[in-house]
Every structure is written in structure tokens, then in C-alpha cells.
Image (cartoon, rainbow, N blue to C red; front, side, top):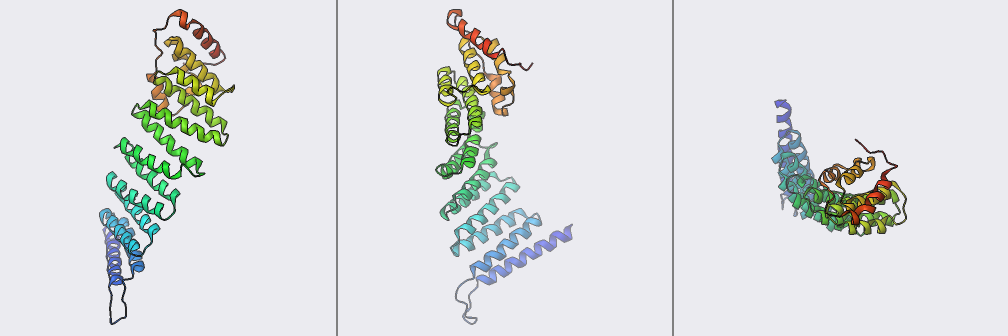
Amino acid sequence: MDEIKNRRVTEAVECIRRAETHLKTSIIKMKFKPDYDSAAVEYDRAAVCFKNAAEMEKSRDAYLKAAEMHKENGSLFHWAKCNENAAMICKEMGDSYGALKYMNLAADGYAESGSSDTSAMALDKAAKCLEDIDPEKAIEVYRKALSMVQDTDRLRMSCGFMNRLTKLYLKQKRYREAADVISEEIEKYEEVKETGRVGQLTTALVLVQLACDDPVAASQSVQNFLKSDVSEDAKVCSALILAFESGDNSLFQQVLQRPILRGMDNEYLRLMKELKAGSELTEGNGGNNVNNAREGESDQEDLK
């Protein structure tokens, strides 16, 4: 194993030597400009050899040297690609902030070269590195990525970023911000008439708005996005709101056990564990709502 590693390191060192040779000028040889393109190729090869030899810091540095060569050569896209490679090496080293630094540079380079999709994907990789260690920074990066594709026809990419943002907001209990992003995502799916996804997201939105203790906003969301819909999503949303407004927490918890809700993502399952219906309402104010909610759930089999 050591022999293989040594051979790869030796090859990397030789690549760097050739790169440095390409950068030298010589009046005798009539070479008046450094050959940045050839040097970039050699530094890139060196980076791969160092990586294969598990010399990660040297691999990162070689990618950054290759990036310098591409910058001198005026190739923004390839400069960005080398920075992205350096970022991925940082990620393997456990250096999340180094990964963010170089991935941000890569994203800017891709954007300047006219590749907004590639730029957004680079930011997506950076944000994923930060989700667990710095959620606030991850949100910032996802916002930047979203801004790059929001005005394009990249629906799936835009909605993917919105989904990640929503989950981060939910983890931080920033429910109003989560609700804003979900509403924005619903509007995207409405544009392409994906009614199934609209229903799922409206159910999620209702849960988040109830977490904000705002059944009025939840009712408005159902009216705006589901209208005269008779789907299971519409039924469960109505039952949730009625039970919540009734103040009957026992009934509300029964509605939360419906299969359509238990099949939601983990972030929403965690949210549902915290949701409670208040008991302050009098029977006169909430009695009709209790009966209506029970009628609405009679055709559903609750999970035990």
C-alpha cells in the first residue's frame, strides 16, 4: 500500500514540476508567455494523484493552483470547476467552512460564465455541508441559490431549494418563515397545475399555520389553494382546522393520527408531536365545530 501511495505522490510531484516548466519563459526558446493552459492540466493531474494518495491538503492546494492558471487564461468556467473540486476536497477533510468558501467562489464563477444552473447546484452542495453545523448560514446559501433559478423555468430545482429552506426553518421553529416559503412553493406548482403536490403542500402549510396559532390563516390557505377540492388533503385540512378551533385537544390529536398525515416527512411528524388544540373555548363557541370535525373524520380509520 505504501508503495502505491509513494508512486502516486511521485507522479503528483512530477506533474507539478512539468506545470512549473510550462510557466517559465525563455528568450532562447522564443517562449515569451507562460503556457497557463498546459500548467493547469498538470496541476489538475497532480491534484488527482494527491487525492488518490490520501494527501488531501496537497490535493486541495493543487486544485487551487489549477484554478489560478485558468483565471490567468481567462477561463472562468474552468476556474470555477477547480474551486468546486477544492471545495469537495475540503468537505472530505471535514473542513465545512473551507468547502463553503471555495464553493461560493465556484458559484460566482459559474454565474459569471453564464451557467446559472451549475452555479445554483454548487451552492446546493455548499448548503448541504452546513445544514447540521450552521443552519443559519445554510439558509443564506439556499436563498442565494434560489435567487439564481427563481426566474427561470427550473421548477424542480427552485422547489427543491424551497423544500430544504422549509425544513431548516421548521428545525429552528421559525414557523412564519416556513409558511411563507411553503406558500411560495405552492404557487410554483399551481403554475404547472400539479394539483397533487399543491394538496400535499397545503396540508403542510395548514399544520405550520396552526403551529403559529393562526387558524384564520390556515382557513384562508385552504380557500386559496384547495378551493372546492374534495381530495383527502382538503378533507384533512378542514378537519384539522375545525378540531383546532373547537379547543378539543383529544379530537385534534385523533385527526393528527390520520394516515395521510402520518406519511409526511419527519420534520412535519416532529411538528405534529408538539401541536395542541387549546381548551379555552366554551362549548357554545366550539360545540358545532366539534361535531363537524367528528363528522369529517368518520370515514377515516385512525392510526392507533
